[in-house]
Image (cartoon, rainbow, N blue to C red; front, side, top):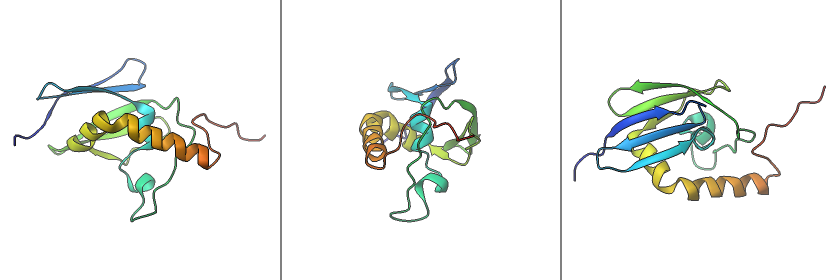
Length: 124
């Protein structure tokens, strides 16, 4: 089986989306919010089973940087200063193919925990 490689990574002008096209012709339009809340970073995924964190309030998060990491991934930086997720080509492909399902599970988790996709105002 041949390796799947991205042929294009393009951040939208409003910085809310990342388009990823692959060498087999597949192309995916991924929201910054989904990338942020499903980040492969230890901060979000934890360091072991059962340690994953549900991240609320990221509906309007923006992508501020996409930096190559070797020949296998990119590090995506967000305007909330999160930038520790290393997104491998295979993980970006998985998000493209299963993102709707994964994001739906995230939304269910938010509801179960009484959290929201919207930022909450801090009390003054």
